[in-house]
Amino acid sequence: SAAVDRSLLAQLCHDPGPAWLGALVEAAIRSSFLALIAGTHGMRLISGIVNCLPPACRTQLSFSTGLKHSPRRPFRILCLGDDPNEQRKLLRQQEVAVVEVSGNPPDRFAPAAGWGGFVSQILADGNADILVQELAQDRPELRWEDLRPLGDELSKKFANDAPPRKQGGTDRGAE
Image 1 (tube, rainbow, N blue to C red):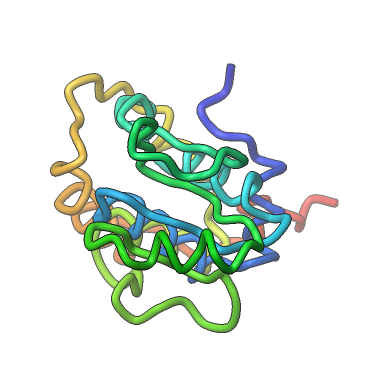
Image 2 (cartoon, rainbow, N blue to C red):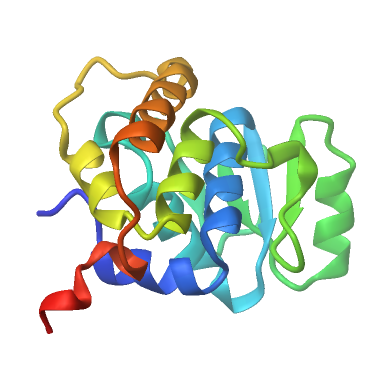
């Protein structure tokens, strides 16, 4: 199967947008436990995060889109339901990063650098094909801690080499 669901990527570039997608990817990379408050969009956002990670790193990402939090089921990403009691209980934990997906992305996960920065930059420039090509690269040894330098390297490379393309990375000039 393809490394990336292009249709999902196009949807997420539209809503919540490249900056949010990059911030969510960065939050997933930097947080040992991330709780998303995203209403009915949680499953789609988690799918987007997974799609924006290199395949070698995807197996290191555990998540739940519907189970309530339990210390016996440690997930790296959890979608919080609308229950305020569950949200308050989770907020009391020290290791949890809670991100409410509304408005602007939180400053602490601003995707200015690293892998999240690369994802945000390349999608904002309309170069989704470049992201797809990079995710298709065989990098079996890649680990979470390698994503920041790899993202920085790719951001520099494509900021200098790649001309901007149409939204979603397709060339509509031939239509």
